[in-house]
Length: 178
Image (cartoon, rainbow, N blue to C red; front, side):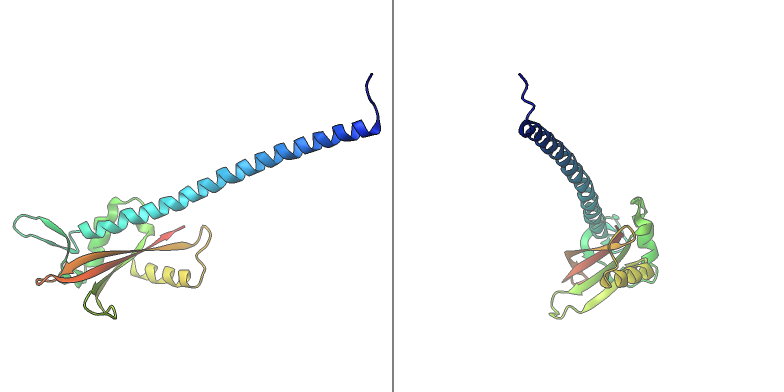
């Protein structure tokens, strides 16, 4: 009634092994995809953080022109005298404290003139300057991977500056931990 031949037993054993291997493979691939998506979301969040922080520069009263009478802020109109002030870095840090992890972030803001084709800097402002320069060296040396590394984000904004509203652009560079 039952076929106890060696061929039947081998086929039954082979089918069982293939089934076990397939099931294990599906489980491993599923876990790999789920973990990979979690890591990708973390990287997306860093990019979103950078894209959220860098526009704050355009709405910062320490860098932009503010009407003295009404207190109205003019985003995109840079006050060069404020940027050249020695206390602008500390004031910028104080204004950016609304962001939770701002203590781990370093920033450089460069104001360039459109008319100069060689991109001569008009003025530069730093937030956590020593940390920015240290992390920039680390990034350029390719020591930026893993949980102890850093990632650099760069954003350009068209602005005007000065009383005559000279066209230029702000280059905002953020360095954030991985």
